[in-house]
Length: 290
Ligand SMILES: [Zn+2]
Ligand SMILES: [Zn+2]
Image 1 (cartoon, rainbow, N blue to C red):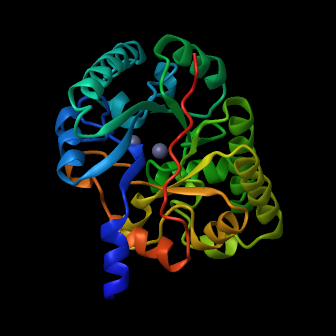
Image 2: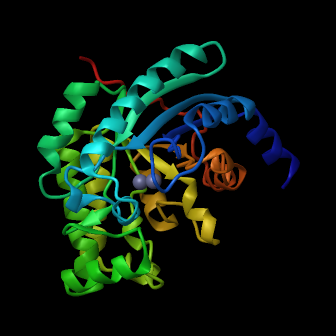
């Protein structure tokens, strides 16, 4: 890394709009939430959004690992209350060390809309992270096998992407989430994603969704998890460049799922942004007023 870049990285505030999944409240994460918060403090983060997944609406919509562990939707919903209680406590306890925002990551599937609204009313999160982990009711980032099922249901890869981006658009219109997470997660198990994303029909939908984000001043999660498998961040470069042209606020999200993934790939991600000339003065998520 050259000296100029190292200086820029050292002087940039460390933040995450999307992180803090913990083993305490999420089956596919590790460690207690408080230890994750401490890791953010140790790494000198200025502010972090703690953004646990919402619990499933019903047993049918559980993640496979939750079903395997025989955790009912009822139980997971109860546990989510505890997440919120503890989150509010930690916000106060660490207020002099770090600014914690308490949010949650919503799901997008049939029936989720009313359910998410009821969770918002019940818990009054500071903001929402708008996500899709399902297309046509089937998980897309859980495993290659599930991805294949979603692909089969959609008919072909182009249709799968179109369904994903249409569903994302509906989700954004319904909830205006302050942060739109891992914008092109649909490419998770598509080795040919570069050419898929270059399809004119898909570009049109991507443009439409980006325009919505820009017009409503939502934040694009610059999701650092994408680097994990030697790949690039979400959103991938072609989309990122479009977002920059449209003036969209791009802010890092480490999508941490345990102490070890706090601040993951941070310098790598910032290097990409710095080289593209993106502002490293981060926009903070707009808080929901109640
Ligand atoms: Zn997760
Ligand atoms: Zn997610």
